[in-house]
Image: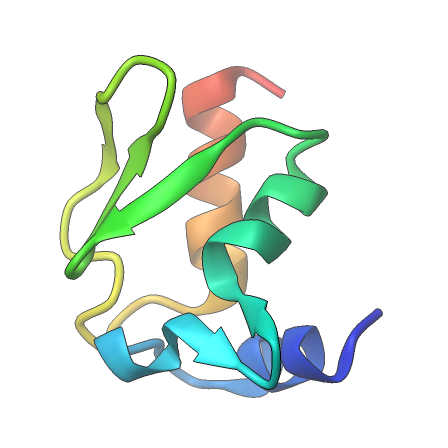
Length: 79
């Protein structure tokens, strides 16, 4: 587990400014945890790169934790 992932997991809510920690991006870490499914953020919303479908509106408004976002991604991808 990376230092960045530890920081994201310990956060009580992720914001737009939390997209990058050290040299790692939040979307890259999520993709790693999702077995290579490619995700990205459009400001505060999370979407699937392949289909451009929104996975989670307002993912980075400070309300959702890393685990919340990962859980929603797994539900979206049926993992």
